[in-house]
Length: 161
Length: 103
Image 1 (cartoon, helix red, strand yellow):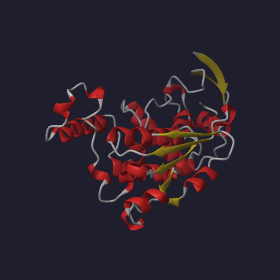
Image 2: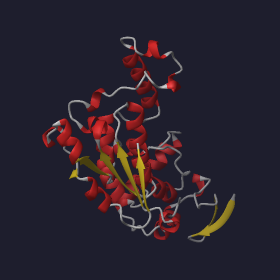
Image 3: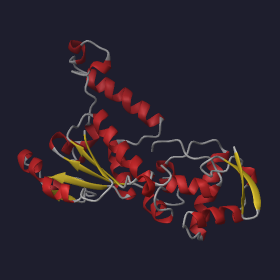
Image 4: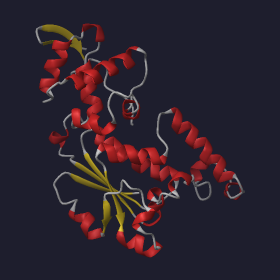
């Protein structure tokens, strides 16, 4: 990957539709990793993914303990009070050890690295979220069509998370 | 392990051109690698290079996040100084191993 021009991989466009911590981190690491390789990257936050860019919610995202077979615990146990918080604390502490920043700092890093951050217009309308509720680093609100317009260049890849 | 001549010095490097022995590095070598990467070095660039080398000597795994908190450059500046993959390019110029972190 030393020469992105050569292999034609120029832009990574990620659509984040979920707000569970594991999905948000996957998305952010992919977007940041692209920038580190000299590849452009953009994230389109839609549906529950919008939680990751809402000022009041982004610091309080959780890992899913129910309906997540990789947690290796019985589903009923995962639903017990405090279980999500416990799993989330564990993951966050492991992440910190690997120098992976918390969500708010990660968004700042992405923005400073040139990753474009977009809110989905339809989802904003649906959840009655105002632009003021979203992080200041947001690059704007787009419709799906406008997002696709940005994906027209050769060497662009799209991924739905 | 490869050997090549950079700026008149014979250096050991890996197949991607990263020096494998920081002891062999000097500014002339860094300058020539920077030219190959189309980067014009300024005092600020060298400051970053020096920071990376010091981190490497201390055995610290270098990440973009750490560079951003170094007080030498912020992340935005880092991307401006070394466009298209700042950590990789800066590491190459600094004569330290290719970074293995994902962040």
